[in-house]
Length: 202
Ligand SMILES: Cc1cc2nc3c(=O)[nH]c(=O)nc-3n(C[C@H](O)[C@H](O)[C@H](O)COP(=O)(O)O)c2cc1C
Image (tube, rainbow, N blue to C red; front, top):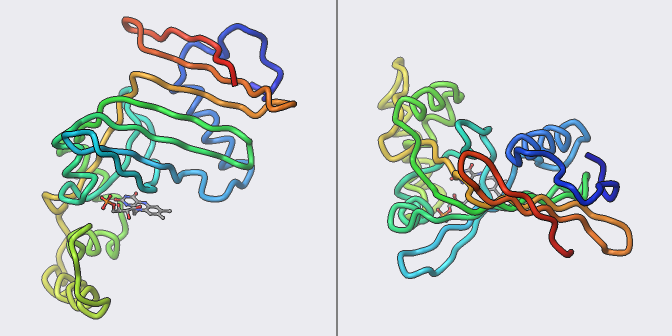
């Protein structure tokens, strides 16, 4: 789908398939960190927070990321499972927004993903109580050394507080820059097993 050349009809029936195509295109075109996106969570009473995380693919209709479940985002998604995300690829002049439910993946999926990571990253997941205060960088490195010694000569198991999260979108918006700031926006909302699509004013 080329920016600015779309007729009024929907650019495709499945916004997640289009999203995956766009993300792959951003990689192919040499975009800067094409796998980085903003993830918003909120407290039980709706106070939002946002941070950058990395895209780990789409599985069963959910966008995947990995994180520490005891981090601020991890705690927020447990108390309020509604989240939002945003990708922006300057190289394509395209943006994707999604809103929906945040869920921890099954432990088997997190185990498999953890096992695929390099050993240093696995040790890092044990060493970092993400989002907790630490007195100094030296203290963090000392914890990393302690963990390295603990697992010396053995495989590193997945920490129970670390794993995959899925954002299962209820709404997806695809945005493409167009001439005269008359950008193309397509809003998809869930309808039964499929999606309803409408064009929005820029
Ligand atoms: C480019 C980039 C990629 C990041 N990727 C991740 C990630 O995949 N998972 C993660 O938990 N944090 C990632 N972070 C760190 C988060 O932005 C954030 O600092 C951390 O998750 C703690 O956020 P929280 O306290 O809101 O939970 C990344 C940061 C940057 C700048």
